[in-house]
Amino acid sequence: MRIIVAGHTAVTPGEFVELALGTPLDLWLGVEGESEMERAARMDAARDILADEPELPDRVSQVAAEAIEAFAPDLFNVVPLPLSRATARRRPLRNGAAA
Image 1 (cartoon, rainbow, N blue to C red):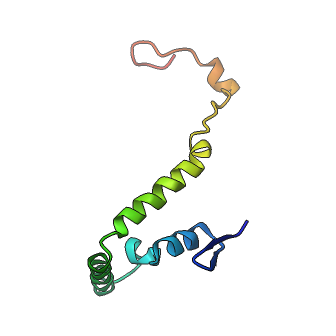
Image 2: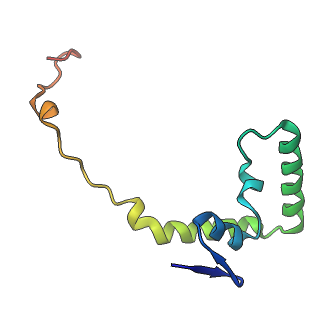
């Protein structure tokens, strides 16, 4: 399935979020192994974007809420696992000690 946002095709969920928000995720989440100088520059850029686009946190909240709504059935689809034979044969604990 292809998702088109503002005329661009999003192939991965990360690309969809980047297109929906208009900023790369790495700007907000950072990248593994970044130096203190790179982190400071990234944070400065993020502050500038937030100053120029005060509605961005609302857009982020909306995208997150829509994602939760769309995927909630899968997120909360919890199925109890069957007990293994070893677990089923164990006797209950007595006085904090295994039987």
